[in-house]
Amino acid sequence: MEKWMERLHKEQGLAEEEIHTLVSMGEKRRFSAGDLVLRSGETDTHIYIISDGIWRSFCLRDGEEATMWFSVEGEITFSVWGYISNAPSRLSIESVTDSCAYAIPRFRLMEAFTSSLQMANLGRHIVEQFVVLYENWHVCSWHQNALERYLHLMDNYPEVIHQVPLKHIASYLGVTPQSLSRIRASLNNIK
Image (cartoon, rainbow, N blue to C red; front, side):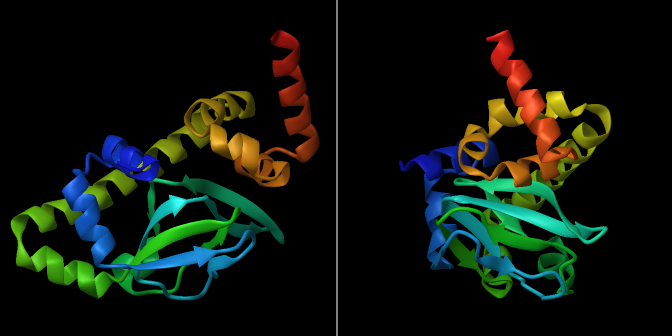
């Protein structure tokens, strides 16, 4: 099993056969670093399974980009507004690194979900996992300080720490790039 499939299996609980079924419904797309997968205000009803690379979701806050979360290989990401409501997204999604993802249109998923109970349960599970991910992010953003959130990012998403520009990580943590540099320096001094 490929690395991205292993993560999808581990984090989503999807069997290899389920992963292949999902991927077969979609189209493999490649993105360059900096490409916008989705712009705020556009409607996108696809779910994306990232097989390589790192994406981020962001919105504008006081004219500045505020990174909401990162998605890495082996994760599923999508616009909640587009997928659930067929409405314009309030967030933009950017490929931070060169990346590859399987774009699966909602209509194909709906056909699969109505064709079998197993596929319907799979769809429910995907949305439930997304809700849990969002809830965890929300709770952490309110109850953890920037250092704790950085340590969580280091433990759970080391590829983000090593491959994403510091300005995006700082934005995610809700600090300035200078504050992030101080956090990193303090951690280096502890080592």
